[in-house]
Length: 231
Image 1 (cartoon, one colour):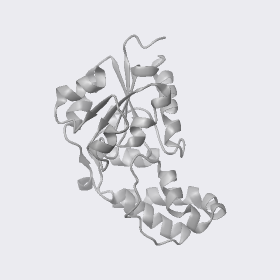
Image 2 (tube, one colour; image 1 turned 180 degrees about the horizontal axis):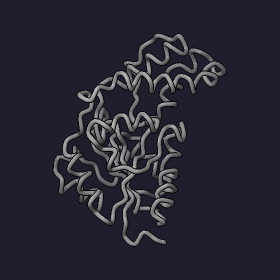
Image 3 (cartoon, one colour; image 1 turned 180 degrees about the vertical axis):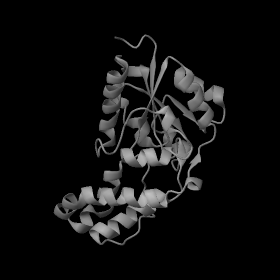
Image 4 (cartoon, one colour; image 1 turned 60 degrees about the vertical axis):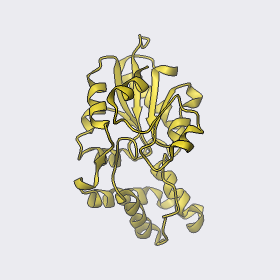
């Protein structure tokens, strides 16, 4: 079955839907120290738009050696999630401007299927979405636990949406919403619509350089946000 005008809208989490302070960054560093006995910092490391396994690789793979890195990767991700569940207090999770109203309106639209497209491991994603009650908007998604390569995730999300709805989503019927250059670029080979929002650490100028279909400062203006996604 074709989409018949329906939209598949895939949201990034960190910097797009919400911020969670430094809980994830601190949890990753704690896990690296526990599993790899590595205690360096990551203040100069850009986590934006990357999968959790990719972040771990970039920080320590060269320092501990590829063999030890691969051998202990599953364990470090397990410890990371344990640390995150302990550190992620509800008051740390702050929805981005306008996003709650935007999700509520999109969820009410029978022509919209909502999903997640995030580098977070699925369990970590659900932890972050729980405090603002955003899990109710997303029954499925594609996660860093599906692939360490962020650029593989749009196809995973589209396939899952097809199984869930019985529809074939392709091209501009798929909308990826995110705050990083990787959010804009990861679906380009599939011809999707990219809506960039400058509510994360990536500047609007840098996002503009990736030529998204639409670039917004935020979703504070509900009508403008809906137009950007549904146009």
